[in-house]
Image (cartoon, rainbow, N blue to C red; front, side, top):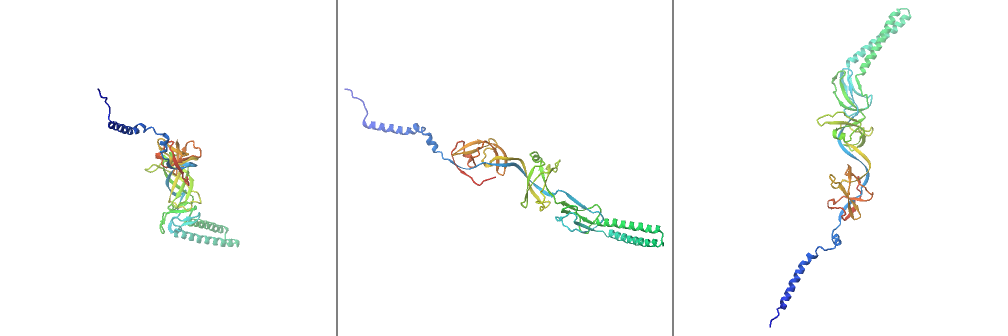
Length: 361
């Protein structure tokens, strides 16, 4: 009789344990990629960002230079007669008015001439008076009286001429302004035509050496400019003159800007000031902080805050001024832009945004 083959209870229990272990190990492989997409999104935490609203403002590109303040017109006081410098009543940097004495010469020869001519004039005029009385008494020919009369008139004219020359020994300022430089010293002998001092009118200007590139970029006659002096004074003016030829090894062009009268009188000639030319001025442009722009050289864009998500917005760029930059995109006037954590943002990413207050151009 044949015996039926089978498995023992112990062997059956071991097999079951082995199969159960295999199934447990395979469970992650089978079901690991079958999670709920909503559960995955919940696992992505919002990114904290600071945001700011764009502003509408007037903007212009700017370029700054250092300039030198000088008088718009300089005048030399010239010696008109020979003599030694006797007085220099106003020092360099001192203010003078038109007609004020700025120098006197010691001219003993001229004074001696005046005294001699005055004596001769007095003699002939007294002689003429005496001759008139004698002619009236028929004691002197009329011709002799007429001769003394001519001598008296000639003497008077000679004195007037000599006194006029003597007055030239006193140098007076022809303008209201400032003594810029003395060319002589006390006691020094000067000749006619020799410069005694240099005066500058009280109308001032600032001269800036500008490179050709910036002239092509918009620095032209009439270009507006802001001036800030070393003392902190701020003035507004415009270009009045540009040299037609460049000068110096740097090939720069001299640009002149007049300083407003009254507000600039306290400024010293020869002092320095910062000149900022305002180029491409545009009114009412939309601007954002420069830090809000990503990849500005190749693909400029920013991130708009739309509720709890960001929207990638391509923009056109314009003028940059004081940390703000002109942007061109269809802004609705309400959405703010992200200014922090830009490197980890992407279109549609959820964010937790905080508005930055009190930041203005």
